[in-house]
Amino acid sequence: MKPKTLLVKYNEDTNIRPIPDQAEKTLQVYPALGIMYIAAVLRQEGFPVEILDAHVYDLYGADFQKAVADARPHIIGFTSTTVGWPNVVEAARLAREAVPEAFIIVGGPQLQIYPKESISFPWIDMAVTGDGEETILEIVKRFDGGGSMQDILGTCVKVDGEVRLNPPRQWTRKLDDLPFPAVDLTPWDKYHALTIEKPFFNMITTRGCPYKCSYCSQVYAGDTIRYRSAENVLEEMEIYVKKYGAREIIMFDETFTVKKTRVMKICEGILERKLKFGFDVRTRVDCVDDEMLQALKAAGCKRIHFGIESGSPRILEAMNKGITVDKIKETVTLAKKRGFSTRGFFMIGYLDEDMSTYKETLDLSQSLPLDYASYSITTPLPHTGLYREAMKRGYVDGDYWRDYTLLKKDRSTFPHIITEHWDEDKLRKMLSRAYSGFYLRPKYVWRRISSIRSWQDIQDLMSGLKIIRLLQH
Image 1 (cartoon, rainbow, N blue to C red):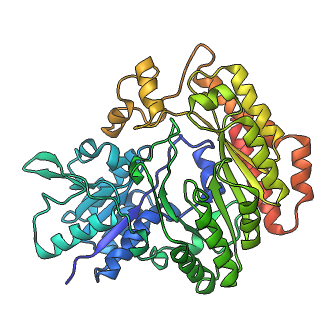
Image 2: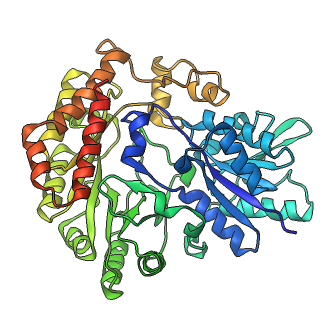
Image 3: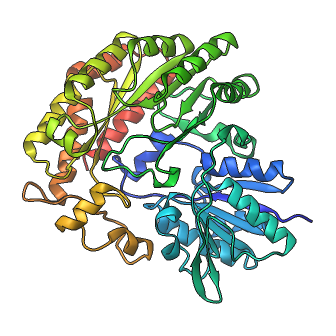
């Protein structure tokens, strides 16, 4: 009998999000694409595999343990971000108690940054660094054949009580060779997002990003960008639309529109295949032009999410963002003119920011023709230029995230840039002010009310108001 693998997405509730955790599920619950890809690879090779999304089912404690035990796995694999790491450590401990003989693996962005620290816990057997598809397939094959687990590329493993970090595996370059994510192993009808029509699916057509913004790390994606072909992307879209009746597809690429020729081919292919669905993309204001916008609109793109981050030229330069305020205004205005719903992402409390640059960000966000705005307090994340500079200047005490990985830090607070301009409490109030200033403007409220066309629109509006109320506390 071949070994069975259980791939787990656990509840990673944290307070790093721009909205409170209790409002997060009101806003959105997405499936985990990473483990869906791994499940597809294992299944293609004939190994039994199951996905357990504990997040969407709200499984904690004994309920989670029962679900794990009922699956009767030989191998259990968890995915984890850095900020959600403590919950994953706890979940791995619960899984060990539920199935003591199971081989427990952890993967995801966290393991690329702190692999040795991450497997220091006795109930975790191995960490996977980098892309997981080929590595986990080799792990399962070795397990099946009774081979040694000590020298698998792209892993960190315990050998005779010592932690060994093996050489990295080459990043997967031929993304078209990977099978499509195993969506049928997930409760895809239970996922939702505010303003998104169901059923919907999420996709990723690239891995990584070519830009080097100082607050962002692409270490988990190879610090470069890798593309799937337009044809491969279209084949996956066609499955979701024709087999599952998808009404929308959410593109999770960091910057979907980096390569214009590829985007244009995808848009042309959607029309040629007569695929009727809506989709949205995430991008930068300097990565679209009018020709591309018109092609996206004709193909069914409904929303564009722009990473704007600041309204201050000085802070944009400090972020190494590579864009100007004029370009922000030009692109967002053009996108709105072409009929897209637009969202802007903004950060407050950045390194060297003061109240004047904070006001520039608020003023810009409210002046742009945006339908939605998302604000967050700047958090220096590991393996970023921002984090290194924050440590150098003393805003972060030691290697905070390493200690956090070892569970030596209070997970209720994360490092922020506290200066003479504000303390933690004031930062929270600044965040609340940003949201209320954008969403409670009389002009904006009237525009939202006047755009109501269905009961779903009313539900979305009420959910949005609930989130705003939570932000006031």
